[in-house]
Length: 428
Ligand code: AMP
Ligand code: GLY
View (cartoon, rainbow, N blue to C red):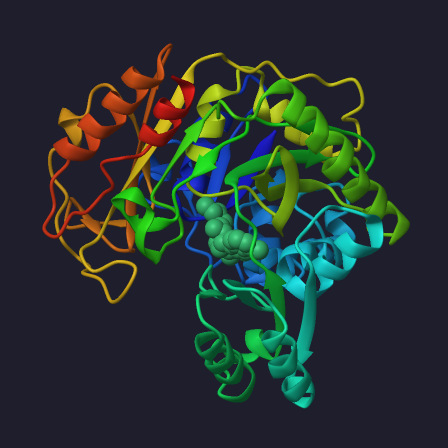
């Protein structure tokens, strides 16, 4: 089968790496891809939001399966668009339609969904410009810290954790009155702050059945010890020792099953990933957010732990044949460290030449924000590359990943030195 992956980050490189090993793969295409994916398949210079051009590529290259990486085309309805093309009815798509993608595309939708179907989550209320006075009054009655979330997609930046009432009030005003996150903050969800340890759980469903992929822990802050600004993710670890069998059973019973039943009850046919951001609060799972896609950089630790043929699983999802499918998962630890451009997550450097890549020997290299120019690999995005170490011990996996991050060179390079160390301490 010919496969088209949409996206250009480390997640898509990790997908491409795994799928390129599949015995059922014929040709692999990535749109738009990056210099890393170019070594595994054919990059097509098409934006993930150019649906017409994507449909044309599906025709031209006889694509049998489209795997959608990022959330934006999902929320904009790439599935709906492809399904509306008479001659593309046979094409399998991994990723929900615009209705299912609302789980990620609208925090208000996802909170209402969770409340309606009894999925444990923080108490919340939604406010708009017209109800701002009620919102300000609501804030007065809440304990601190308090969480404010822009309703729509805001590239991971739409969440504010306010430590004081004054901060919370001015954030609410900025979001609703000054469109701090554009139209994404036309509605704001105000949510109780949850204490605990975070965990990312990944479900792959065909709308009827599901498999749970390896869980992961993400490191969102720019600095060591979780200090500084939020980022798209600076590293990840899998497995996560506090995701014990009994905790994961709770997650399945209290979160995954009611979520899938809720989707069915809403008449939403969901074929794709559900990435569930969870808080383990005193041993109980609470959903912080749903995403309609895999995580990045979590995919860079999840793919290396999957032993089964991943493409066959994706085909089963697209054909609603997941029932009875099992997943072989390796016991090995996987740790990924994201190397980022100087300045990131604020204004960052671009176009710096990356060297020493050939010296990286003990880790998998996943390109994210890179480009090839004049025969050189250069930095292009904030998150530049992820290096994944795998090993029977967490210590070794961390060491391999860190060594690679140290080895590669470019001006302004930055990365966290503590990926996995908290998990190591937790284990002992
Ligand atoms: P999100 O963009 O929804 O993933 O939120 C970004 C980060 O904010 C999460 O990964 C959490 O660390 C934090 N966060 C979001 N909601 C809450 C909450 N209700 N309680 C505590 N932390 C939260
Ligand atoms: N690493 C978090 C995300 O992909 O949303």
